[in-house]
Image (cartoon, rainbow, N blue to C red; front, side):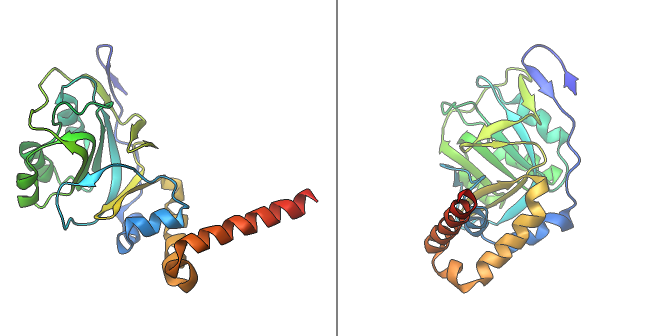
Length: 225
């Protein structure tokens, strides 16, 4: 852990799964993965910067940005490795853009797979021209200012209404965004494969979930009796 002034904390990139361990997730839509995980770890309210947008999967590098400064995001990119996905919390700020065309160019040079901003971005046209997957809650014309590296890197954050930890596997596409704790990935791949190949749940996911609830209640009732 690298500590500086109060308000700054950077934790080294965690040991993550190898690409071949999570790559099978790229075969599935984020909404199917969400259904297979009973809608847990599904982000809300974040949309793609453009359409169509490539599907991505990779380990999360988490960033928490206080105020309106974005230097902490630049610092996080320096810690990221090719294939990582930046997941950024602006702590509710929608007053300025924390990502745009210039940052996209830097991220591409470093091999970063994509960015998710629970806040505002801008330069959507430049982001699309660079074919860089980006998601956000809103757009803003005004850019965030440079205020020094205040914030946190690779600490747990809230993004899209869920908790995200560094090293969680993120899957994002035109349908939405899900995160999967590393320990869940193998099971998530198996359950999603079963979900999309089973005619009943794939044809009617809502009916499938209701059946699971009924079976759970029946099992619980039989144990209680």
